[in-house]
Each structure stands twice: as structure tokens, then as C-alpha cells.
Image 1 (cartoon, helix red, strand yellow):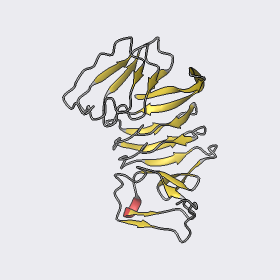
Image 2 (cartoon, one colour):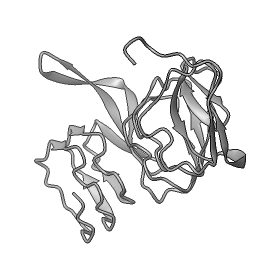
Image 3 (tube, rainbow, N blue to C red):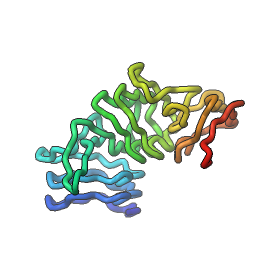
Image 4 (tube, rainbow, N blue to C red):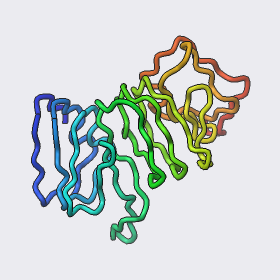
Length: 212
């Protein structure tokens, strides 16, 4: 955690869990291999890292696709953890550039997954994505979002990504002005972090829960 001079880590094949924010801020960490024994990687384990990730061949729960670490969704029944058929995006290195395609096999993008990826551009959200976590795209200042037409949960309005009427992410804002969607019900934590804008325009209609 915040070991800025740390360049190399060798994880033994006895490690089962990589905890929340375990390598957060380890900005010099160049490479890490996820051993076969690792079953769980918590959200935000690699916040702020540009680390290249490799996964041992014997590990069935994690994989690397286009530089991104993805993991199988886990199900816990009576303290017995099993792997489901669906995948989630766990981590993307902060030095990733260009377009990002979230494949149709992905259903979740966890908290902090793309946090600090300031050079990613077009982000294509696949048709099966049903959850995007807090701070998932915080600091992605050049990102623009495209949602597959088959996705029934997410939509794009005026440069911002919404889950229904909840603002979940925003990157590049044209003309420095972001107009919020009519009927917006809230802004997720980190949704507009790092966004370069001059004006935030509120709609005439804002829907709030009674508890808000």
C-alpha cells in the first residue's frame, strides 16, 4: 500500500486473497503474476497502478484480456465459494491508451476498475453489463462512452453514462458543459471525479427518494 518505490513482487502459490487496496499507490510496480492459488481479488487492489498483470495457467478464476484483469463472478452459498459463468473487470492499468471494449461475457465492472486511466478514449459497454461500481471510471478524462443497443440498463446522455437515471460515469465533456439528464435520481460516487468542465447544468426535473 503506497509503496511508491516497490518494483517487483513475487506472490507465493499459497496466497488465496489479495485484499482491498493491497497495492494501491504502488506506482513503480512493473509486473505481478497472479498464482494458481489466488481465489479472490478485492475491489481497488491495484488503484493507481500501471502494473502489467499475468495469471498462472492453473488459475481458473482470473484471466487477462487486452491488458485488463478479469475475474469470474463468485457465488457464496453456506460459505462454499463457487465460480459462475460470468466475468467482471477487476483492474485496468492506468497507462492503457486508446479504445476499450467491454466484451459480452462481462456482466460487472467493479469499483475502481478503470480508475485513473486518463488516456483511454472510446469505452464500449457490452450488452450484458448490468453493474458498474463506484469510481469505476474516475479520472478517465478523455473517455467517451458507447453502449451496445442490446443493453437494457445503461444509456448515454450528453457525454455521460447512466444506469437508468443514475449518473455513473463521465469523461470527456464537449464545450466544457455537462447537462444532467431529466429525471436524474443521483450521481454515483466518483462519477464526475477528474472531469474537466466549466458548467454543470441541472435539469428542470430531478427525482429524489423520500430518504434523500
